[in-house]
Structure formats: structure tokens, C-alpha cells
Image 1 (tube, rainbow over the protein chains, first blue to last red):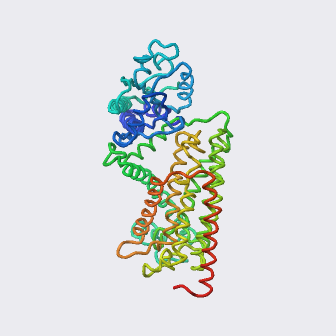
Image 2: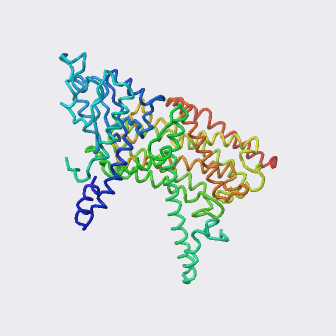
Image 3: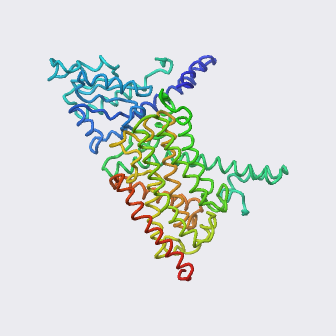
Length: 170
Length: 354
């Protein structure tokens, strides 16, 4: 990320450099929004809907989204399914292994607030936003592929609005 | 070998630069350097663009075989999907694992990428459109593509990851095994041409379509089929893609690579796929020969046809197991190709061919 991190500094020094900054921002945002490669990460029944979304009828590939098996090459975790207290450190570890910029979608009720069935269970994490920062919540139990697709499109819209100057060393 | 025009049929596009330099009275070696540099830059640009195109094409073919559409939303039928992917991979963080072998980890993708592109030096893209017509052209290509094995092994070792190491070792075992039937198939053609130069091989197939080596029964078709099987394995493509089998080894040798380093592996893989197809076209399908159209158009059309064949293999056949793969290479392909080579040598000696 070295060069990209410095680019806004260079362009801000230019008089009227806003144009360069804006167009570069647009290009990078468009590229990042249009190729969200998601990690193969399914923990419960939501994963079935996730696989269904990747398959013929719904077809994630239309949005430019393909799965990667390794977190190093993924841009997005779709946390599909119940995250138990034992699974939570693994999710955090996978998130830490991903390369910046990285995004998280919380898919289904369990990942949002413990879910409609496990909300009072001793073993279930009550929402994955306790573990990782979440970009998009998709409610449902499990959400249908249509709502997952809509959530991903909303995430793309969100990425297109991001500012290059907001990129900070974390 | 000298050409009537330094840039073949593309002389109208680049010739003015060459003639401008010629008029300054530079000595011939300098002009050769300019010609090589221009052709090299041209080949590099074209192959990079082709690799991007092939990624998109493969995704579309995969999608249509599975009754999907593939990339649809980014441009007409998603034509700039892979451009977006490339820009995104450029902006991704470059993860360096703490436990890596620093030297090996850094150089593995570079060697893979450079080896994939160096092979294009002796591939004739059209009449006179060849960077350097070496008299050992096909031997050079076989030697250079072997660097891919080293780079995959380096990637596996340097990552310090058990899956990556397994993937690297598997790819080394596989590529060395399939190198032998591949070379034995190529030797059949070299035997009949009597030259290893790629241009000579193409010139030997001029005239009617029956002069193509794929149609010279019985040894031609056998050599082509064994070559295309071994080439699929050489390019690490399904059904021989055990080095990156997702179900067993998470992503194989490139598991720890992110961002642009991964993109280099990815593009090199598709450039390798195009290389083996280009060799197949040069050896068996008459290279640039064809009626009406310019020679480089024929070459590209034929090569993309063979690439299409490789992609159909990928999306219709299941992956082989490791032991099945090795058994197939050593117990079937090697005997068949050597028997074919002996048959071809005998026919050449007896003069029973046309």
C-alpha cells in the first residue's frame, strides 16, 4: 500500500490538484467495488444460501464476485452462519490474515444479534460486531439469495463513496 | 535468417521508426537492438492484454458451461471485469509473512512472470513476426518454461506454509513427470522437419492443410493428443491442477501471496496457457499459414481455438488424484509417446510418409 498511501500527499501539493485526486479516487473505488472476492467461510445454514447465491440461478459472478479459499487474496468475509464463542477467535484470526482493504458482511440473524434461536444460548457470540468491524448487515434466517445480492450491491455503493484521504495507517 | 521487412506484415505500423533510424546511418547491430526492443515491447504488451482477456474469457466460458452468465454488470458482458480486478490487486496490501524466507518469497513471482514471458521470444506470431529466430527455438522454449517449476517450488518453500509447500512439491513432481511425454511428442515433429527453429517448423507445413503435422497419420494425431494432454498438465490446468487443488490445499503454492504478487502468478498462469497453445499451433496446426487473412490473424485465431479447447477440458473434467496423475504419466503417456517416436523414426528412415 506504500505508493497509494503517499499519493494524496503528492496531489494535495498541486494547485488545483483536486481533479487528479478525484479521478484516481473514482478509479480505485470502482475497481475495488467491482471485484469483491469473498472468502470461503460458512459456519451454518446461511452458508447453504451463500453457495446457492454463487451457483447458477443467482450467480455471484455477475457482480464480479468470485470465491477465494485463502484469506490473503480475499477482500470480503461473508460471515454466513452462527458464530460460537469457540469460533470467534478463528473469525478474528481470518480477518487479521486478510489484506487491506477488507470488508465484512454479517449475514443472517445469528451474526447480527445472536439470532432468533440462539439469542439466550451460553455458547453463541451475540453479534460478530463484538469481534470484527462490520460493513453491512443482512437480516434473515437465513436471508434469501436475493437479499444477499442486494446487500452486496449496497456494499459496492458504499465502497464507491469512500474517500482516498480517509485511508489511514491502522 | 534475414527478412524482407524487419517487422513482417506489421511493417506498415512500425517500419517508419525503423527506416528513420536506418536513415541516420546507424550500424546494423544497433538497428537489430532497436528491432528486438520494439518487438519485445510489442509482444509484452500484447501478451499482457491477452492474459487479461483470457481470464475474462475463461470466466465467461465457465459460467456458460454452468448455465450462468458470468461477469455481466461491468461494461458490455463484463468486458472490463479483469481490468477492475487488476487495479484492485494493485491497491491491495502486500502481506509479508514474518516467517517467510525473504529472498525466495520475493523472487518466486518475479521468476514465474519473467519465465512465462521469455518463452514468447521464439514464438512466430506471423510471417517475420518473431523476436529472435533461434536455431534451437523449441528447445529454448522447453528450457525456459521449466523455470516455472523452480518458481512454484520457491513460492511453496518461501511461504513457510505447509499447504504452500505441499503445492510446490506436487507441482514439481507433476511438471517434471509430464515434461518427458511433452518433449517426446515434440521430437516427432522435430524429427520430420529436421530443424528446431520455429520458423522452419512452420515453413515445413506450408501448402495444403494436409501438410499440417496433426493430419499426418498415424504419428501426427497421436503426437498431438499426447502433447495436448501433457501441455494441460504443464500449464497446471484442470484436470491436472493438483498443485492448487482448493479442496485439499487451500490455494496451493500461492496461498500466502496477496496483491500484485498474486496477480503475477495469476497472469503467468494464463500466459503459460497461451504459450502451450501457441506451441501446439506452431508444431501441429501450420502456424501462421492460412488463406485470405493476414498471417498474425490466422495465428491468433488458431491459438485461441486451442486455448478454448484447454478451457473446455478445465470445466468438463474432474480433477485427478495424485497417484492417478503419476500413474497416467509414467505407465501410459511415456510408453505411448516413446512408441510413437520410434514409429515416426522408422517411417522417416523407410520413407513411408508424405
